[in-house]
Length: 507
Image (cartoon, rainbow, N blue to C red; front, side, top):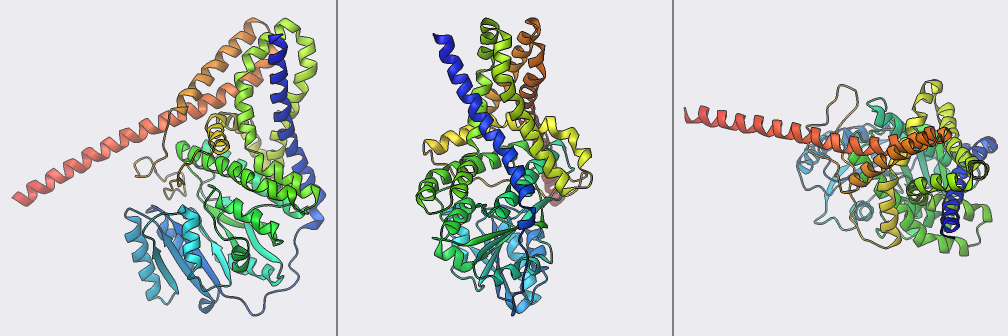
């Protein structure tokens, strides 16, 4: 009886994972099905409207100057453009930002430095605070890790000639894509989101979201939709759905890109993923009921459900991981043929669906897409390895555990020669790395168990899990140790220099 109860739980989890994975196939289908429905610019805005650029910043001493300089370099009539540096920093970033703002003010730019006395509402609070004094009819937002291209406003602003358009989002690209294995895989993950998901949803008439940066809002759309709110960690996703519920139309420009810097520190990456995963579930709890009660078409409601709850798949993947050994024991007791007929197709479709989804994103965005096939197994492993980190985020959201908005550290990494280890900001490591290590060991045992029982067909699948958990755990620990070594070396050098200076002064 206990065995059959276990199998019921196992197959329920497996079936749910299968459904979420199969949804990737549906996204690819929508993408190709609606190629002819891509947004077309029918007429231009005349005259050009006034635009406010908002630059939310918090402790970004390495990249804030790059951000401000690039924003001031945007090609748009200067009399129609004002820039707000919304700085909540508590370190040297404030001095760097103020000096940079002063420099561009001297050159005739309408740029303002705004520093709040507290971080209430975090990023959403800063954006809301700046909105009160903004001069523009439209609001462009760029995070500190972005380098706005000079023509971004001229390529987006004309879509607002249609009075129903509330937001225009551009596609992210990545300055440091080829910096490491981690950045290459992150880039492919993000490409799947932007190239396939955003495009498919937008072209097919479903809801999609502003990504917090590299987009332009109609100020009226923000205000009439309830403004920036900070009861979730994904204020961008929250406002996006509220605005579209109000009837505002969103546009995604797949072919217009905005360069960004992606995390090189895996602990910073995990922190970012935690915030996104938790925020999406918080938004689902907040808005799914109003969405289902609305008069929206069923296709919009169903896609909103899959979009907002997608991170539940991490919790399901973690449960599936823990159930792997008992499922192998059950296979031996019940019979391999029966189990293979029932669960092998689900596992095969789920794993190939994810690879197919990301492969399509690379083929649609890059001419050298074939060279990226080599990263697909590692991409799947990293996704599984993140399941511990992101499951914690999902559980925190489900049980209403409050946590602060943790920024993702940026280090001005643009080329392989650039170094970040000795720089000040760092991602945080926590006790979850022990669970990741345990799961890596657990799957090593599962591989051994499969081998001695001649269950050879399971070994490649089990290795994807093993590699994923070990990669995330060992890289998390390795980078922390490496940073500790460099920090101690830097401290010794600084102490030595101070002693030398004191001797010289005494002489």
